[in-house]
Length: 162
Image (cartoon, rainbow, N blue to C red):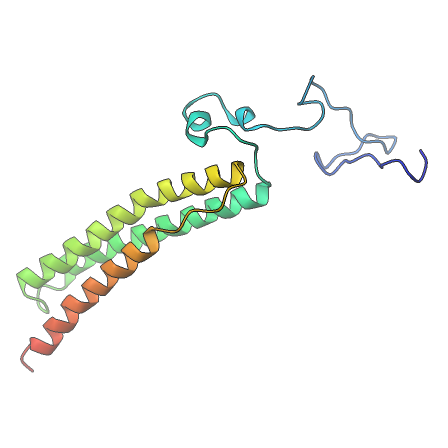
């Protein structure tokens, strides 16, 4: 091997053959060249939902997945908050306020949990097609819903006799 030739790339598999050379890649066509297209990810519902394209860098896919899981954690926190308001504030809040706040939190949890999947899917599609990332629609919904819950509680606290 001369200085102008490329060195074997073993970073794809993380293994080297015993003689120091890169391991042989089995397969034919684009698989042997290391080209992983979008159709290699599966042939079922996920492949159809992703709409083709090429697999992005795994770091970006994993970051997208971590963001999805963060939205799911937020959704679960909203649901837990709604249940907690209904279960533990009967002595503090009247039944109408308690039910309103609990239902608002539960609805926020529902919308955030459901919307997080579509956010993950749209970002994954955009990355696979090298398109601009879509705007996060969940953030304004969550901000508006949280503000509404806070406004209801502020009105209750101000109007409550001392």
